[in-house]
Amino acid sequence: MAVKSSPQKNDADGSRSFELKAASFTLPIIRLVDNNVEAVAARLGKKVEKAPDFFRNTPVVIDLSELEESGSGGADLPLLVGLLRGYGMIPFGVRGGSKAQNAAAEALELAVLRESYVKRDRPKEDEPAEAEPRIEAGVSAESTSARRSAGGEDQARRSKPGFLLITKPVRSGQRVYAAGGDLSITAAVSSGAELMADGNIHVYGPLRGRALAGMSGNLEARIFCQDLQAELVSIAGHYRVSENIPTEMRGVPVQIFLDQKVLRIEKL
Image (cartoon, rainbow, N blue to C red; front, side):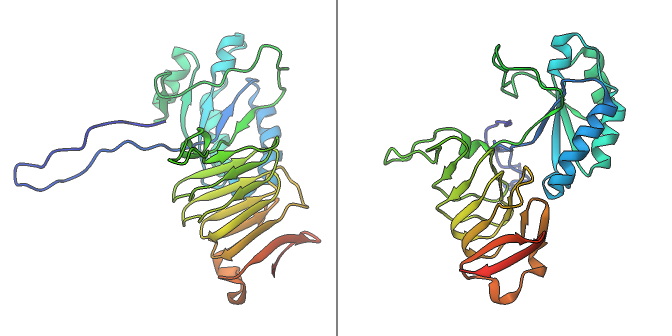
């Protein structure tokens, strides 16, 4: 989602007090398919247990569109918002839903995202209905589109299902998620960037941001990088922050894995 505007002109005294620019941010979306908040709490709790680092202090969008279309009634929005905050998430806004739900969202000081701001991913007609809330953690806008460079190469390629290849730097604020497979980055990862994969993560350059492998609970997942300078590394919810990474492991090629559910870092 992005807000677009022309650059601001100078003030009367020749100075510029601010600039308003376009920007893209990728946010996880919790798409409700059941208005039973207790059921949502139970199922979401299991996901949070598997990957607590992913959800901690993460802004999320609540998608109410399926409840609206199915006519199953509205969820208790204040209760749902409290639930998400209790799990460490930061509810940012809602999309879809009835007028009453949108009014409730505004009363809770949540953004109401209109269709002009978001592109809805409608399920295929033959796609079976899911019995739990769907959590969409997508790739940042700069990575998801098949953006072509001057040489005609794609920035993001999928050579096989579940495998995601990124060939350009991942910058601060970008979040890349390889759902169902491995993630490979052939460029630098800046501080403030976040890499996530249900499988392994490979970084063939400096890793300065956050890397979370085994997002779906895969204890066999690993992180491989050529130059470890990470702010945080995690395997299936077991993590270390930069302060707890040994000095001798920083700036060198390493692999990160779980050994009896203990996070290990070894030189390659």
